[in-house]
Image (tube, rainbow, N blue to C red; front, side):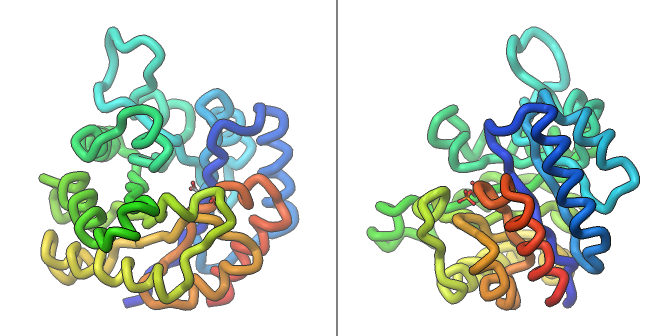
Length: 254
Ligand code: PGA
């Protein structure tokens, strides 16, 4: 089955409003029509509205980098799906390894956030990935399967069909160490097998599984050539317009 590739840029805690607006304008102007590829950028919350307004009528959509699972109330410092959507987001990254590592994100909170995203009309990009030590110990599949099963527990078939999974080996994030296409494809294929068990063949075939971890202009094309690698979640290289455009092009040329 043909899935439209997706290239998503995760800006993390980078770029002020002005710098972000300039970046997306550059991307938009240098690469006007990517063809069959969905392009998403995830700015910090403070820049969401400005970026969404700048990208109005463009082919690029906006994502939040996190949400809280409650809708509103006494949760000082938190942002719910309602507010992210109100600020112009259509997608939300959930369970990024930095959130798991530094902010106590668990498979259980990931699951609550995924449900909250769907409830309020955001499409979740759910991140999973093993650490170096887990890979060394031969635990890749066990770790990933648990993250997927628990993170996506209790979803409807319709929700499964619409969500996006991102496989991001923790040892490859921001390190310059990319998984080889073969290594990534092996995990992507096993995630899809598990998704078939969880929601059936038809829905599982529709789910896009992105790869993330030191994706750049040089390695994107090779990674994206594998059948179960349906796009990329890009950190560092998404801050460099030329590189990000090259990555978009390599997906469009599939
Ligand atoms: P990186 O980050 O591309 O800088 O490795 C990827 C991510 O964390 O999503």
